[in-house]
Structure formats: structure tokens, C-alpha cells
Amino acid sequence: MSLHELSIAELRRRIASGEVTPLEASDAALAQIDARDRDVHAFLDVHKDRARARAKALAESGTAKTLPLGGVPVAIKDNMCVEGTLTTCGSKILGKYQPPYTATAVARLQDAGAIVIGKTNLDEFAMGSSTENSAFGVTRNPWDLARAPGGSSGGSAAAVAAGMAAASLGSDTGGSIRQPAALCGVVGVKPTYGRVSRYGLVAFASSLDQIGPFTRSVEDAALVLNALCGKDQMDASSASVPVPDFTSELDRSLKSVRIGIPWTFLGSHVDPAVRASFDRTIEAAKREGADVVEVALPNADFGLAAYYILANAEASANLARFDGIRYGHRSPRAQSLYDVYAKTREEGFGREVKRRVLLGTYVLSAGYYDAYYRRAQQVRSLIIRDFAEAFQKCDVIALPTSPTPAFKLGDKTDDPILMYLNDVFTIPVNLAGLPGISVPCGLSKEKLPIGLQLIGRAFDETTLLRVAAGMERIAEFPTGAVAPVSKGIPT
Image 1 (spheres, helix red, strand yellow):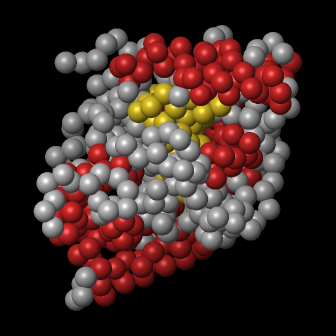
Image 2: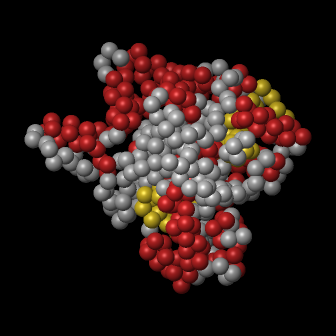
Image 3: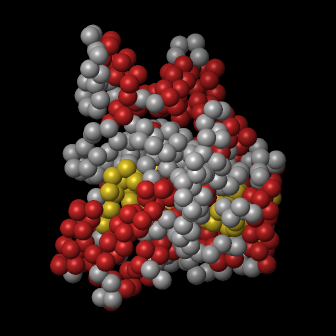
């Protein structure tokens, strides 16, 4: 097995024993980027020299053998600050921005010994479900270059799926880690809101955003979460909750685990291939001794509408800082203060970002606040209550991650509603602030990955990961698989 195919756990074992050096590990990832990223376009910026220098420093200090992620090559979604490197958010308005500090989540990975090899592509300001909204070109799914990798963290998912990084970081506001994980055949975790610091993450919707990892196995995800989680004084929303060893229960069986399924919500939203794979995995869990019970999420069907009111309202407020004065792009055509604002945003923001800012501003405006924003908050409260009642009957809740396998590039770009429906199963989790994980559970007839989503109680990632590891063992998908090389870019 080539170095770029190794799990984090195996790579760490070999580095600790001296069998592999950090430089060899990072060079293997960089070589895979050279071989595949021309087609996939997962990366916006590759830090080759910085990564190799970091690898050499880890080896010379001896810390690569002792740190929990020592020598592990990781990629970072390009809406997280890394000091001295470009952080564009996939937008022209930040096309040349270099932050003077590093995001806490990134710093914690580096403190654990990880090597940052580059920044990955995303839908502009994390607004999208296909990574087609980036100002710097689309990312292609490494399983099929004609198809989308999902979004908004499509670059991070594709990088791990193609073996270009052992792990990556993404952000999840309404499914932007779990949905691309499902479409790219990798594991993606959205931790509980507040479990991971958001300091240094460029905000989309502050009450919903959460940073989490992509890996090729549940064990690897647990290892990365061990480094990521914990209170941060720089983020008032980060929770002062103890961080357990998330790997501690991964070997436990599924026996007597209670898996709740909201069959009514599942309804007719799902592609037949996704439903068949989901049903097979649940039946396999029953054979392993899991108890499957029906639960109700009666207000989950309203989650999509509530989300696109609340998220857009917060985006409208958060993106007001991009005014052409403090940082980022400033229009050279501006002749007045009004021009600075209007023309800078006209030139700098893409179509989807403009759409969402306009919608968000509208629902916050006088005369519409109560009709839209307040009602959406009330729906959010109902969804939180629904989950609390459901968890009285079960330990985790299971749903498909995405209603379809990876769709063809361009198929949904002209219909925003059709695109938004990709996140119908993931959005309620963000509204409730709960942890969720997507685990590959099968392949469609076209050999496209299908993801199973598990949802846990707040701050109970240990149980969530335990059940996910059990599902991974019984799923009809090769754990840790690197996406096969696709044959050329379609015309």
C-alpha cells in the first residue's frame, strides 16, 4: 500500500517506529496532488515549501514520533485563517487576503504535529452544496470527474478521497461537511456546536457554523477530533466541556445500541439507490444486535425553509464587513463612498452570495422581521424540542446523509431550490446544534459512494463515533478506500 493510502493510525505507527519520516509522508501527499489535482482541482493553494520545511523540523526535533498527529499531512478549507498564506473563501473579494493570525482549529492540529499542505476549494463563503460557486473554478468528484463533490467543503472532501491528504478540515453550516463526505466516499464529522473553536473561521452564519474533520475512517476522525476539541478563550461560543479520548469506545459492538429512525421524515425524499443502501445497512445493524426504533421529528420538514431564512439573515450581517475599506478588494471604479460599497460588492461577490445577502437583508427588514425571521426562530425551537424527545427513545438517530449520490456538474446550478434540497437531511442537525457524522455505506450502480448519517446527543461524540465505527465495519464499502483514478475530464 502506498503512503498516501495509509490511514492516520497506520501512518502514525510507522512514523513513531522510524519506518517512515514526516518528509516522506508529506512528499507522498504532494506527489498525489501533482498527479491528480489538475483534474480534481481540490486545492486553491499548495504549501509545498512550507510543508517540506515543517516536516524536516518535526523530524529534527524528534517530536514527530511522539505527537499524536506527528507528520500527518492535512488540508485546510480556505475559509480558515493560516498566517502568512492566502485565505480567499473562494471569493474575488478576498482574492489577495493574507491573515495575520492562524485559526485555533488549525493551530491545534499543528500543535499536535500535523503538516498543513495547502488550502482547499469551496463554494464562495461556504454558500453552496456543490463547490461550483467558487470564484476560482469548480472542484470535481474524484470518483467521477463529471460529477460534483458536494459542498461547500467539496475541496476538502475531494482531497481526502483522492489520497491528497490524510485528513482535512471543513466547516458545516447546514451539511457542508457531511454532504460532501457522502458524495466523495469519506468520513465527515460535524461536532456539537461549541465543541470546536470557530476563532479564525470566516463567518457565514455564526449560530450554525462548526469546524470538523474529513478522514477515510472513523478511527482517523476520532484521532483528529482529539486534537481539535476544547474550550478556547478566543471564541465565546466554544464550550467549557471536558474532551474525552474519542477513540476509547470504537471497538465496542452494536449490541443493544438503540438506533432511532424518523421514517416519516425519510419519506419520498430519497433516491432508490440511497434508500436501498440505507436499508441494507440498518438491517445489518439489527443482525449485529442493535435495536432499531421509530422516532418522530415532526417539524424537520420545515427545517429547510427555516434554515434559509436564519442562515441568510446571519450572512447578511456577517458579510457587511466586506465594504472595500478595511480589507479585501476595493473597486477601482468608485467615485464616491456609495460607489465604494456598491461597486466593490458587485465586483467581489458572486451570484449565490448576492442572492443570499439580499434574501437575508429582506427578512431582517422592518415589516418582515416578525413574518419571517421570528417565525424561523420558533421553528428552530420546535426542531430542538423534537430531537430532545426523540433521544429519550434512542442513542443515535440514523438518516441518509444526502438524498442522492453525486449529481452531474451543472445539473442543479440553474435551480436554487433543487440545489438546496441536497441538505434536507443535514440542516436540522445544525439548527439543533447537535453532532452528526457521515459514514460511507455503499455504492450505487454507477459506482458512486452513498453516505449514512448518524446524529447524536449534544456533546456525546463518543457514542456517535462508537456507533459510526460499528456501522463502518458492516457497511458495503471498503474502509479507507482512495477514489479510483477517473479517466480524463469530460468535455
